[in-house]
Length: 439
Ligand code: SF4
Image (cartoon, rainbow, N blue to C red):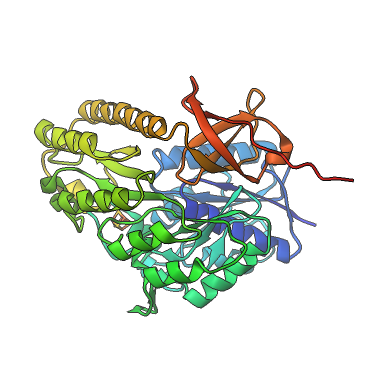
């Protein structure tokens, strides 16, 4: 029995895809093992958004070869699609597969027999037109269920459409079937995942379904306790979706909404499809209907043309907005994107300073959000981790809590009251009740 190990970089979509590819291997009789367990085959799923993707990829390959010098090393994922030749030159790599090929890797690499030359199977991204469904299971407490792939937007800074291709989706029928499979396991939370999830519904190049209808249909599936939407563009997060989430049985009060800039001038240069006023409206609609809702924001600092004044517009906009945390990205040039041709490049030192300012703001926002929720009662899904005798979990509105470690709490949903914020910035809770089985 050949042993195969996986390593995933990047986003939830990559995790869902690695997990599905690993199940394909298991179905074919391979044994899935941990990275350090001397595998015969390594599959490394890469990301193009990760900083220093090339260095990271090289390092993982080196580690793999140290553990298992005769292993067969395969690289897939966004970085493999964008730079297949560059990866093929990394010492120790046996095969590089692009977006259109990665789900067929077992058949394409027939037997994983080593050859003299590195195999590069990466078609042009236009060839990646089929939707391959995927979900992660058993890897984490939560399952990431892929419902959409690719993007038709073409924002000036983004390489994702080049790495993942055009927007395409699974059918609601298939997704519901996958959700029922997941519901039959003891997974408690499903995160709907995609590149541009609000654009859900395009099949074979034609719009056939709408995201809101998927949301309503999946909410009916018995056996899934929690549903979360991974991240959704503000222009596609309609009032209908917000209103539905506010009354839903299973959708949790948590939205992650990319903003990228609080300056309309920069938003236009980025090619984003909304202005800050729309973003403000979305936040206010959410908070009116769900005052305890968590709102996460993606923001990019140092985009070309971002003067001190425009950056402060972003800073003040975010400071005034009732949001809960930020994911701050320092702008970095990516090959073949429009932004690389723009003038008024912001020096790296300034980009880093701005990033630091927003990270501090994020901590302030998070703390304020946590404080507002103290003494309130929520449900926590406890995870399989232990650190200094403590375990962690998230409330429905994405507050990270800490409780005394008890293995019986793992993957359990427990009602707790939030007590205080500890020195690590997580929230201490009342002791969750554990029901011991009677003999
Ligand atoms: S919406 Fe913009 S940033 Fe998001 S994946 Fe599409 S092109 Fe990239």
